[in-house]
Image 1: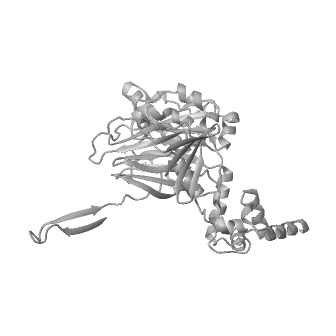
Image 2 (image 1 turned 90 degrees about the vertical axis):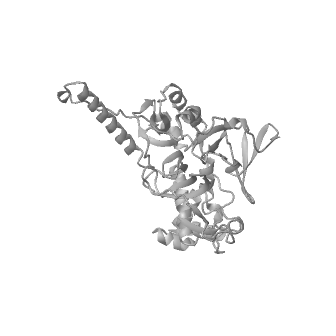
Image 3 (image 1 turned 180 degrees about the vertical axis):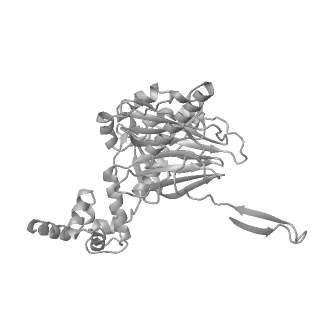
Length: 406
């Protein structure tokens, strides 16, 4: 907390001053569901939906959906950097500084950007992943905000002109960097599950599992926002491995029993049911441990009054599932918005390799040594993970020749 004392009018009254307090909201270190209640899950096929309830939502923050109808969106991230993807919708964040309820005006009433057609392809030209539109209004591109940050990790590549790098790598870094994902409609049973499952009275979010793998965690400020955005999970993108989980995976039965010998009256039954729900909640929270209370690396994107928009990535682990995402937290660090994307095993390996290269000043030999690999093994792994274009032909041929003779 920074406090500055500025004299308002020295000539009139030197004792009068204004106290200016600037409180910078902290970066999140973990994802916590504090203030949210985990309700019993519902299952359909390989899909499990776990409702998240909020009994006392804040009314001074709302999220509204803005629909885009173009085949491709080109987002101007910063000078000379463009993000290209299919973007089905954006979210418009609206807040009040005086804690009064936000009026329910839909974000779909607002327009932005430029559109043009290239043959039969319609293209949206958008500016920034998070764009302020008015004093108390911010448009974000959900999940794309997180994915752009993931793609930009170590984007510039080596700052040292190591001789083992290709000319392209030395002049352009990792540009372009590409990752692939699938739409939610491609996951078997998900559309049916979202259509037929009950939405609870106080529901503001959901934990989505496919074959008991956490596929998404989605939280919004109010139950009204959730009802409007419930089906938007179909428009989100997911790791391609979840496509196969949806086709061939299964879900288990979360069963618990009552000890009839301890139930003598209505109060005993009510207490037993309360304990049963608590057991369900604890176990379903345990199922999401890959994201809950996991160490995060976060970056603040925007401060909106008493709210902070941040994107994050979990600490990269080759043993656990890893996630990128975005959150909005209030001044008490309570979760108001959350959306995550689960990295595939290959995406994790790619990010982990870039991390190790950066940690070793992008020197191939040092990186191989730190990993307990030979230089030839590192080069082979880079080729398999799609980073072969970083390596010059001399090193590639040298390693291939050594592999043939060994």
